[in-house]
Length: 149
Image (tube, rainbow, N blue to C red; front, side, top):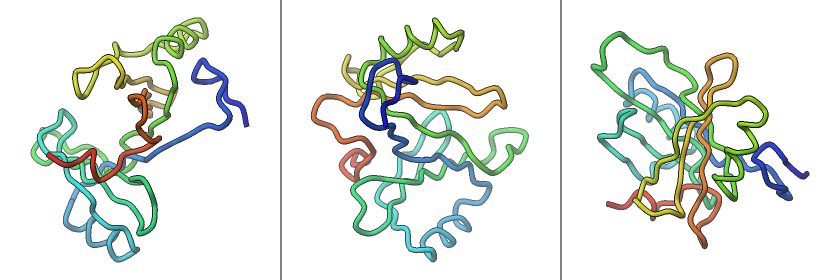
C-alpha cells in the first residue's frame, strides 16, 4: 500500500503504537500483563504524565503506551490518548498537510537532534495523532533501548 498522507510515497503505512490514557496504572498493568504484554520501560515526568511501554513477547517494538497522569486537576477520561504515524520527512509531511488544511504543532526533538522529530495533529473528533520522524537507522517503533535512562 502506498500512503501519501504523510507527504511522501511510502510502501506501507506504519502505526507504531497506541497511547492509551489510564485512570489507574496498577489496575491497567495487571490487566495488560494478564493478557500477555510485558513492561519494557517507563518514562516518568513527561508533559503527559508517566508513560509505560508494553510489548508482546517476540515483538520488536512497543505496541501500547499506557499514559497515566494522576492528580492533574479534573479527571480526564480513560481511553485513547493518541496514536502514532511514522513519517520519513517531517518537513515534507507538514508542508503537504498544510496544503490540505491540516494544522500541526511546531515539531520538537525528544533528544535535541534535527533527525528525531515529533509533532501533533488533531482529527475532527479531537483525537490526537503524533507524527514521528525517527533518526536514520532507527526502526519504526519504540524499543526497550529507547526507554533506558
